[in-house]
Length: 184
Image (spheres, rainbow, N blue to C red):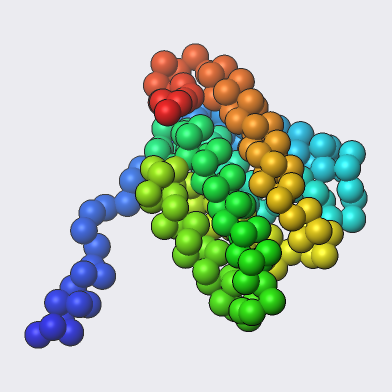
């Protein structure tokens, strides 16, 4: 009986949503293209070797802030807080426990503690977990940044993407497409 109840939880509870209108898709594509293009140019200006500002977690943020600007995960508070707090957590863990814990434990702790802090601070932004993980598994160049990592490339990169999101997401004539829904 318990097993059946468990598997019943995996049944569909709803129907899948309809595809978004093409004009909304177009604005999402334009925003994602411009956001990542600017980050790529900015990254190449600093370091071609590590793609300093071109982090995977920023690609995931681009999907959220340009593709779904109306969801809570996409709001500026979440975008900024999720990335920056997660970056601080990963630097703290590597600096304080890096010599004692295995890489696997550091990876797990960095993501788990990032989720905890994002929940507690109401800044849940799923790419923040990737930001924490990227520092822990990052190259020697990334880890040499130490306490600078949360500020650059993370905070600076986030503010660049936020500026582009504010411009692109508010260019549409659609009154329902505006960004942000809230700041704080």
